[in-house]
Image (tube, rainbow, N blue to C red; front, side, top):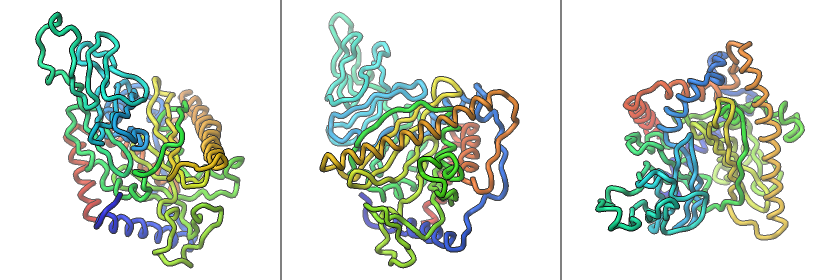
Length: 417
């Protein structure tokens, strides 16, 4: 939970953003980028660039690897593969989270797969055993194997941070990039959701197009009433103001209206004291965590929910994989509520799989023809412009430059408070 000054400053920042949304909504305006941007088609199709992005973005930058509620109890673990790197997350005995290279220090075999709860992991190849804090505690047939220093053969540890009910890890054991600097204070605002106390209702994986093609959609309200006319409706809003903390962004519709918690009623925020603005208003819109996370609020099954979409590049330039986590403020209490939550989750599967990603795959296939030199991002698509600017900047930055970039961005964010 947020505490003291951090809570006050974060709430004030949320109020400030919503005041801006209301002002634009009443004036019928929106924030516009300086100009229409041209993005080279190679940004989506070039195989060499795609491999470089995996190495220099996904293996160097902190990634949001799990919501905290996916590992709620001591002993809980999750093994996953990210851009070819085997990662093991554990909830240790003291309640903290560990992030390890999921490779036995004997021959490199993954020590565990899938999810579960365990205090120890025994490698299925030769039987070496590790505690869930990474320590090597058992070498099979030690007299036959020979003397080794077990303290030097623990699972390799990745930098890890748990904040705002979310878990970040950097897939480089030697990284000196501060995860706190990288987040630029954005996690203080994400804490307004209260994810620390939420539950994981369900999750699933969806195949998608090129990772940037897929991610563009999370930063784009312009397409909503067109592509999603049959799901959200053709009269749905298509405008978005964006707010940035380094490469991380919140996008929200400029409007004075917000949904009342737990109903379809729309509230006019100008008629309500700010102290009474519902949490839905304060966190409305889409919150993105560079380079691969989208968070959007929903209501179904008797309580607040959120879809956390976790996007990773796939095996080829035209593929990606998204894990959809549906988290809820509280566990559904009745069968009817559980059915409502499941219907909401299934609806979002249809929207993303059959509309967003299906379109993205067709778009990517067309771009691979080589018949276009660039694609366009309009002045009303500033969020997408910012994303591509940061992707290009970070893929070309050295390790030292990364540290300097985010130290500076975090300093700016702190000064703004």
